[in-house]
Image (cartoon, rainbow, N blue to C red; front, side):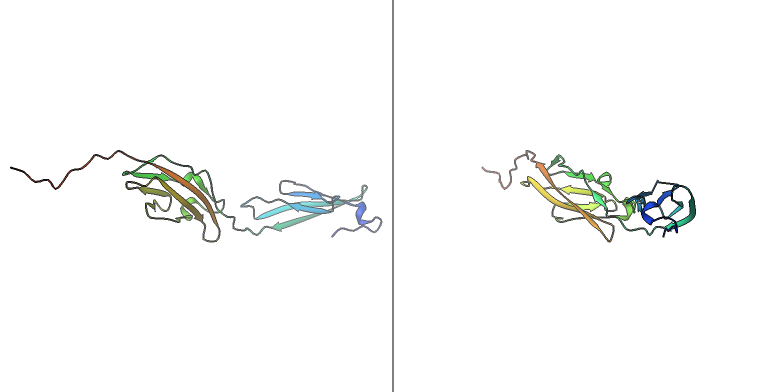
Length: 171
């Protein structure tokens, strides 16, 4: 609270010694905080002035962290050939400012031809004949929040050798 027996509150101005995370606004009567992750305390020297005289007070603000949602982005169609095993590591496509990638879990909506390995960071495709498209919803979760991305993979058919069987010797 600011006050002055000689002036109206609207005639007073607030300043802070460090504007890294705090900015005075509203005619300098309100402090606006913009705190980045991993900041737990802000120490400020706050001053109030009427233009002639100034008062100061040191203040410590304790910041309570919140869990930010993970993100998933940049997944793209990969060249996958049928009848082969293809591995797609998505570590570079997932992020969470509060957690390491090893603390995140990856889920996919369809495990018919795709499984998740490598501590939930690698998609392994094993696509048989006659499958030309695999559409997946891939999600990443930190246990509280989840992010999703849809991606479609186009499967390139491989010309399989013809087979012959069941013939018997003839005389």
